[in-house]
Image (tube, rainbow, N blue to C red; front, top):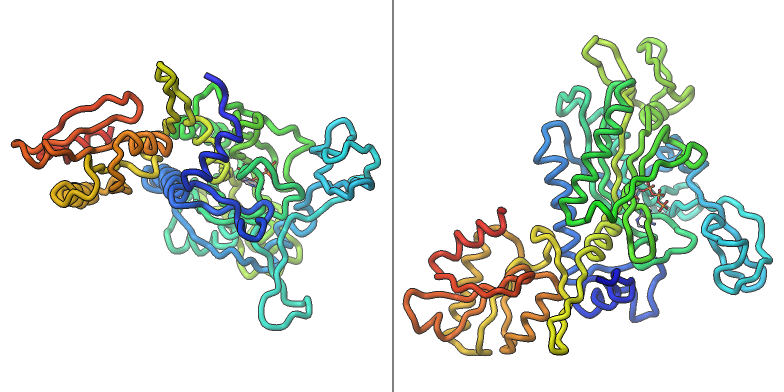
Length: 454
Ligand code: ATP
């Protein structure tokens, strides 16, 4: 099977309502995308799977939903004001601007000229005015990562939950980076979502937990449908580490444009909690703390030996948008059905599918059949399996093709037999095998619960 191309995905996303260019009617806003009717379902399902695995299935992680607007001091002491930048180069010929580390053979990617300026750092944070006075003195930032609020709320979470090490705080939310050259569809954008876990551990236990989280996260991505052979683990060389990291693994995926980072798993040491804590002699903190930080809290915790410690932190940080792109890349399939027929199928894992079940009347606008369809849909919604869509297009073949393309695992067809014969029954069509099974409506509930819980 040929590898999925970006063109195929972009076309499907627009055609079927997964993802649209933001501000499209005004020519678009570069590096910003909107999720359409099916994209929002897919993205929500991916986030729900992450939340479930992090919070509900574990007993050592709490959730958080912090604000996007961030106090300037937070990003000052975190080091982002000084160091969160990419090297930027200008082409003197075409005036294009590029990330210097993305330039190949010293040539401008736009016009091929070699007349380029020396790289200089470009800070990626979006600065914004806060409050009614626009004199440049009262500004904040749109957060460039969700993590900082987890660090600044560390003490409040510990005090309100009585957590002991090791434990984590997880958060899903928007982040903003003024990328020099957004590209590759939703892979590198200026507004995106992250799902981040900060897992706090006793200093000295960090390397062990770094390995544990690497394995956990690979397993999770496989559960989302990514094949292990399409995943690569990249160990970031020391000279390439972010300013806060002691070590970092990237989970890379074979995207249509190449093997690239899907999730970073960094050992951030005690860098952030330490930097947000003023050095306090009386606490005997062994960690580095900031000598003149003006934060009001000591971000430390009492360990089992009654000693105050600034924990080390392991951070699995996934890009939700890159996750959507990865699961779609993996799921996209073009199947030759023989005799000149083919179909596109999105073989998403069923828990990710935007629509779980489509209820389709064999005949359009037939009152009796439609009434039965509505009744079935209402009953299926009670199962809590997700979105159940009702079709009324009258063309069963087209409806099957459309639902194949958007990854709907099951289609239920209500026909004349359903309303005329006893016991009442419907046809269930399976997306992947295209097999059709006749099931009594009395057994539908058990059939679907079994199917979706498997
Ligand atoms: P890259 O090297 O690709 O710029 P990064 O190493 O700066 O990414 P991190 O700071 O580790 O990224 O952020 C964690 C995750 O957030 C990344 O693995 C990625 O999935 C996601 N992410 C980061 N920047 C972007 C972006 N501009 N667009 C979409 N997702 C992003």
